[in-house]
Amino acid sequence: MDLLKEPIGKLYLKFLLPSLFSALVTTVYSFVDTIAIGQGVGTDGAAACAIIYPVFGVASLFGFLCGIGGSVRFGMARGEGRIEKANAYYTASLLLALALTAVVWPLTALFQREIFTLFGASETLMPLVLEYGSWIVLAFPAFILSSYLTCMVRCDGAPGVVMGAVITGGVFNVFGDWFFVFPMDMGMAGAAIATVGGTVIQFFILLGYLFTKNCHLKLVKPWVLSKAFFKAVTAGFSASVLEFAFIALTCILNNQIMRYGGEVALSVFGVVLSCSGMFQHLFTGVGQAIQPVATTNYGAGQLGRILSLRRVSQWTVTAFGLVFMLSGLLFPTQIIRFFVNATPEVLEAAPTIMGIYFISFLFMGINIWATFYFQSILRTRLSTLLTVLRGIVISALLLYLLPLWLGIRGVWWAMVLTEGLVAVITLACMAVTERKMRQKAR
Image: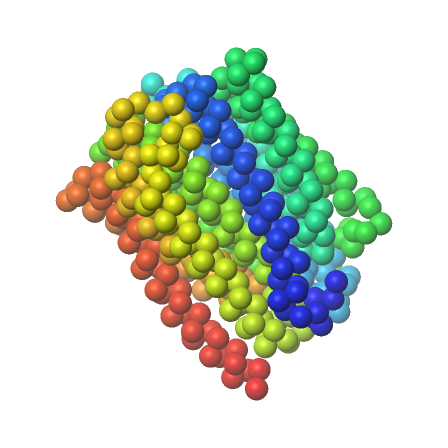
């Protein structure tokens, strides 16, 4: 496909549909895990899932740091017609991903109990958390490198390969969750084995693509390796900050929920987190779909095409956000019953928690999508600033202040206000950026 000449709408759909489908299948990982654990283990299992969830964020942090950074630089150089330079960025980002994996993996394995405590695990939940989490830590390299390869293979113009890898891994995960948790009666460990197996399969399919004749990603010697590292890291920094902010935010949320609401509220939040994970994957899917097109056209100076891409993709995440918000407002108890074998206390708490928290999804899509959009046009500082405001500064401030007056409700309203305030700031920055791009395009 020609990223510089084909109609923007046609190109957008070519990347969007596989990206969204991959996001949906990826979501099945956490969805099916939560359902299997919630129905097979109970509400404590759902609460343990909320503790474990940030571990996947840690893997994504390092995978996206190298993968998005490498793919953005790769796409920009290819748009300029500098193929060898593009492959130099690919080589540097791959070496960086492998080096970070070699450092992070043993540290995560050595301090996993301390990490889970930081994420909010109580003594009651710790055995369930370790039963699941130890398997994830064992296969940690597959999680990091799958995230990395997903970015690079998609940017190489092969979104269908990414979709196929994710689907194949997802099918194994769905079957494994049923087989290991119920017939084999393996509980949390069974769900973890299914997730690990699916991710390993996905990794090997993506790895195999690198050795096919259709792959344009070639290993070359970068002229200055340290400079290539730096440029790749700076391009992917805001995406990794997004993941770091997610980890920090979930850690604060888990601890504040346990403090003001207890394990019943955390059980509901475990389900909310699974829904949020699906929604965030879909929003991220839109962002990742526009990156290959946006970066290549930006490198070629086709600014008018980028503005067209911005409009159609922004409408997409806005429509998604409206649908996601309404699902929680209209069907809270149905969603809870779908995931867990809920106690009366959980069913009583669900409508209030979900009725408030799901409002945040109306704004979340704009904030996540904008991170990828600004990265694609090399507004990395602005992207990073918005991510830090959303994921660390405003959210942490509100999460500690509002519960002092509103109790556990303050935790849920903190998320709504955070997403809403950052969305307003983001749209203002978008308007200023677009005006400058229009002036430059004349």
